[in-house]
Amino acid sequence: MLVSNPKIFNIVKDAQFALIIILLLTLPYFIAPHFTFLMSILISLTTILTYKDDIKSLFKEKTIIYLYLFILLTYISALWTPSDNIFGGNFKVSIEGYINYFFLIPSIYFSNLPKEKIKLLFIVLIMSPVIYAILYFTNYFELTHIYSYHSDSINGNNSLYADLFANIFLLTSSVFLYINFLHNIFAKHYKKAFIVLIPLTIFSTALFIDETTVSRLVNLSFAILIVLISLYMFPKKLKFAIFIPILLLSTLLLNDSYKKGINELKDVYKESRYEGSWGHRLKLAAYGIGMWTENPYFGRGTVDIIEKMRQIKQEHPEDFNDPTVHFHNNHILILVQIGVIGYAVFLLFIYNLYRLNIKDEEISLYKKATIVIFFTLMMGEHYLELMHTSTLLAILVGLFLLYKKQEVSSIH
Image (tube, rainbow, N blue to C red):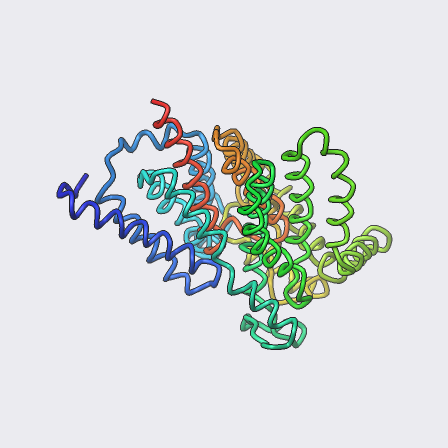
């Protein structure tokens, strides 16, 4: 512990907690990555000044061991990449995308915040995308027309960027609120349940209300989680009675755009036509699988994947209906980068996070829901290494590990 003066120690600890809250509140709004990185550095510095534990305790957690091994494999894979420039291309993206796992997880783990403050941080995280939720409603009712646009142009139109990524934060908030709502209902805390129902209704409806910002994969994940959480939390007598209504409601939430996507998949199967969003992504996935089979065990490395895809685009421009040349699938990206060996290490991280023994049922369900959210959404984008979504996952993993540590220490 570098700070021994009790007054200064308390000031630094208060600053640490405030910095984590600021990061949580700003994260959904995609403020410049440099700001997010700066906040992570500051939080790390406050931990360095105040931490008392043996750093070895962090590496007794298998979740951390496999996560860091997976990231290090991704970095080291640059050494066997076919490209001459081993520090270019995707390597820089991976460095920037994964860096906060090294800063934030240890910082939160060694912050030794009490369980009450950890739960408060979950509340802050849950409520953080409230401005987006309100904007989706005001845009829908034509009171405003405020969207976030990427600078690239797709088929002559500006493409929504931050709004679609913000849906991940709305999804996470909606799922956590649903868990908390059911928890209060079954604990007979009806007043608390009613209070939770208000933001739950606003956030979950925001995911579906504006067709401009709807993400089919996000909403599909939400529907799946509503069914799974309901089956897990409802008493045995009510499980099957409630299953069909919940399933029907979840089905209704999946609008006509899903029918369009399914038709695109049919075109791929019957006529080998890769058209529309889903068809286009399947074609990119097919190219990714082809690249993976060239180096199935350890992958082709992390450097020249974009360069390789640009080469394929020049040869087959008809298969690319937007400027992007990445796979839109994080699972395939991992396989291409570090092969089946690296993907197995990633699965071991997921498995050990799932097995992380948290006694608090609500926090434990948050953890399991987080795994489902990221594992499913990785099928649509590279969320594991995008700065803001990777920061979200790093914060959540840090909070889960810390909560488990505090539960163990309270027993002893």
